[in-house]
Amino acid sequence: MSNTYTLVAPCFFGTEATLAFEVRRLGAENVQVTDGRVQFTGPASMIAAANLNLRTAERVLLLLKTWQATTFDELFDGVYSIPWEELLPADAAFPVKGSSLSSQLSSVPACQSIVKKAVVKRMMAGHKVSALPESGPVYKLRFALRKNTVEMMLDTSGDGLHKRGYRRHATLAPIKETLAAAIADLGRVRRDTLVQDPFCGSGTLVIEAAQKALNIAPGLHRHFAAENFPFVPAEAWRLEWQKAIESARPDAAFTGFGFDIDPAAVELARANAKLAGVGERCRFEVQDVRDYRPDPDATVLTNPPYGERLGDAAEAATLAAALGKVWRFSPGTGLYAITADADFEAHFGQKAARRRKIYNGMIPCQLYMYYQRTAQKPNKKQEG
Image (cartoon, rainbow, N blue to C red; front, side):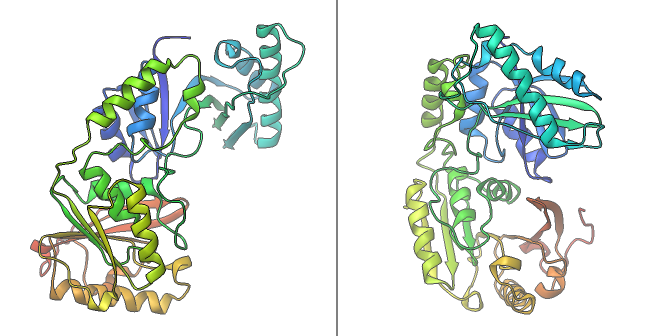
């Protein structure tokens, strides 16, 4: 294998710029940003560094080959040309997943079968064996067909990177950790920021803000598929882990507060914060949003209940109105609310100074941004 690897990090639509900044900060080269992903290159150690440190990436994929295919023969030949015997041991388990969009090879199950067959043939020839037991470590293979262009990739993360290891349980329809981290970045959370969330649920927004402020690497408390890959040296993992630990800023002055009307959610948030290593910096209390008063110095990051979390659009509108009333009476330095409610501004009672379109999975949302300095005269310019 080459000493330089091409990596692809998928992300939520609307968070690409944040992820690109993270990638560049790691020292990656040839950074390319497209819708829903960031592509970059680096040595084997970059595989470890990206998995350990990227807060807003959904996973890190190793791009093995890109080619054109309009027939199953072309798909098979492209997959077979990859030196799988250099990547996967003879006993590797290698499930195949993929997608197809605007391509002549439109049947994903058929493509999966062809990809699997090609890998098996190459592995048997390369390892000089007549059978592949698939009883060893798991190597998840992914292909993507877009307009007849095939990308063949190897998943280096295993579980999605949103699984930090601290959220054992969650409230209904929780926000993903990776999306929460992007909102903390857009909310300009710094090491001395005071963050509050009046609809904290299981505490994800406050916890991700705390980890960002304290520079706690999001992958410190979990494992990754590529730890078992022979072409990523164990020493590279050890060094990147040590570097991440040494980069933490335990002296940061960050403080986080979360409030929720549900006592069970508050207890869950406290447990999650403790597991995340930020229990001493984050406090969670039972409180109705109508009784909430933002601290004048607080940055408010919140995901107001809507859809699955509430099931009642009228109640969601009432809560948004209550939040707006609270904000106008006692504004903090900034409020960042993500919601799928297209009428949020009307319910809140005030136009946002700015807004950004972000997809929460397949759900189109808006991040509505309010600032204290524009509380009375919000900027009319909007970001779509």
